[in-house]
Image (cartoon, rainbow, N blue to C red; front, side, top):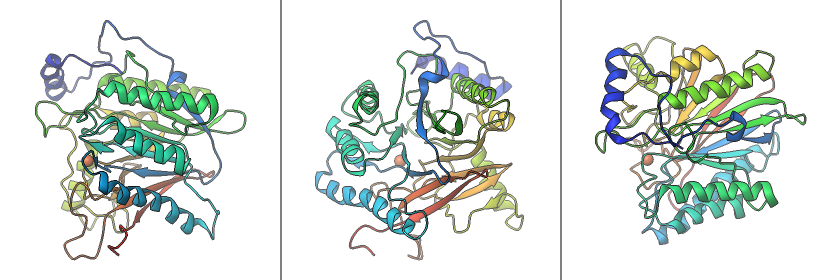
Length: 368
Ligand SMILES: [Fe+2]
């Protein structure tokens, strides 16, 4: 994790907007370069490996009574998964859970411990978390939170008492806190698929201006993909990218779709909803251009806009919104009361190439 002094923000961002020139590196006297392997955790791959995305659960510190409700709703994601897989692959749980930010808001340490213990002691499946814009709204330092996840990740490697696959390196040369990788490997540790997590950071000039992916993060992504490609004999390994705030090109896809609803491109997922604005950072630092150049990432997903869960295939990359996993951040009923946007999104990797995605909507008990 590396932070740029705030005073640099206007200088950096205006040069990006006006000239489109993105500096390749940013300097920080305390930062150091680390090998790609230090950011990587391996999980065993098999055909049908499925990731479940939770996002924007917004568990609140003052909601102790509500925690029972949210505990049951999170466990319901798993019981429904098992139910829906009983006639096919008989999977009981997803192979990995990724929480894409705003997990808890205005929180105490015990609120995150409560969430992490649900994952480690009840669900018992590999999990990780990337930060949203709200993660720093906590009653403790962000360093404590990073340290707690690193501690659990170390426990997983030491004695298997945690299922956390998070990794973050203090004082590295990559901006942000939660940039890490999960490699899905065969028994010889050959990387078959790759899951890349990026911290889309917090705020820029004011509370409602989202931050952006920094050049050092794009450079890190390039290092990850190029090294993996080289180790795979020059052929890119298929990857999925998890974010909190969407890439700026999500708005291009949505705006084009609105202007040309008859055009089959971008290919829209059946039933995806867009009740909220599409609100990326105003700064486009070039991640999507890099994704297209490197040819590895086939799917990206995010959270942040609570009432969007659409997905579209845009220029060969599938853009997704996760399905929000709590009702703590707004009204999730559609205006006609026909749709309820709570639950999760899943991503399934296939041996023959491609990753498929599906939305899953569930109700809280008593609301069906
Ligand atoms: Fe949120």
